Amino acid sequence: MTNLIDMLLGVIVAGGAWFLVGMSNELKRLTILVNRTREDYATKTELRDDMDRLMEAIHRLEDKLDRVLQGNR
View 1 (cartoon, rainbow, N blue to C red):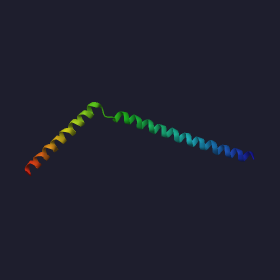
View 2: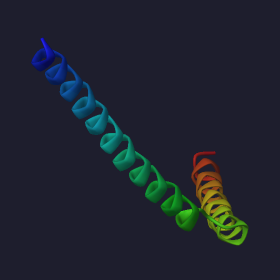
View 3: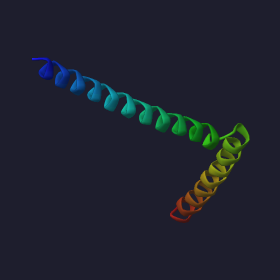
View 4: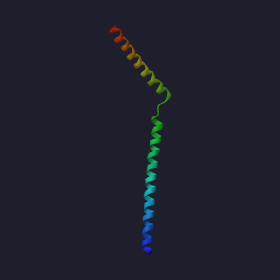
């Protein structure tokens, strides 16, 4: 009977250890991802520059569309 109890306790302890190791690895992975997110996050000036380039491209498309539509009149 004591052997059965010892085996059950061993299985429970091994399962708990396996669970804790998995949680520890996941915590490390999430910490790395959070740190990478902070490093890769766009600054206000980068965002402003990207938006300026996007607006310039939209204006060029508008100008081309206006020229095409004026040619059809």
